[in-house]
Length: 241
Image (cartoon, rainbow, N blue to C red; front, side, top):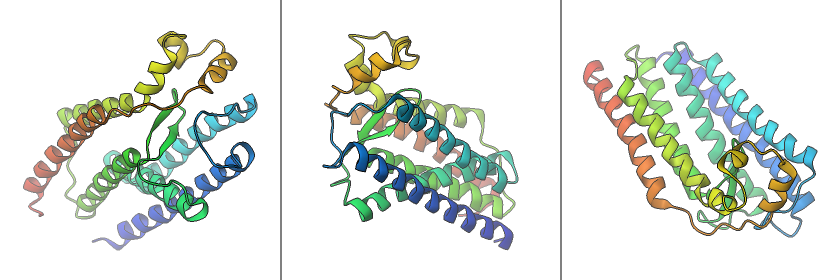
């Protein structure tokens, strides 16, 4: 392996771990303010400026992860690989640090708010951990083949499978929340609220009921199939195991 490539890989790993700690520390501060007795649904109302800050903080997190991928990678695919690798490491260590510092989550099936863009994502901790592991594996494979100068592009059909699987997984995360809001809000209002205050107040009554593991599993399998098609084609072309 090329030493420069390995050094960059290690640096990206440390960056992602540090981001995981930073993210967990922010959550600890928020829980100390809003959930001193411990986090649980239903949600408590945040001040509007705090809620907006959280949304922009999550957007900034994506920008940071995307930026490190852009800086670390030499080709577009390698940049993407470093991005998803960093994302997966960051996500897993976020939960590791919360477990070490707060003793939370109680189990991998504990419900959590996963993301706020473009609407609220919820699900058991196990689900994003599975996604994170998948991203890490794909990112490592991209880096490995690039380090051997044997990296070939991902074909359109493989990108379509990755995108389709990701959209299905995304729906599994928002399905329960959207189902709760939909009787009182249109789909457009859920994603682009005209009255944010009313939507947030209504959302404070939300308690997760059921996570659709079937939908999640279908999406995850499509993603793995796309990665698998690329990997076996890549392996056959490059001659690597």
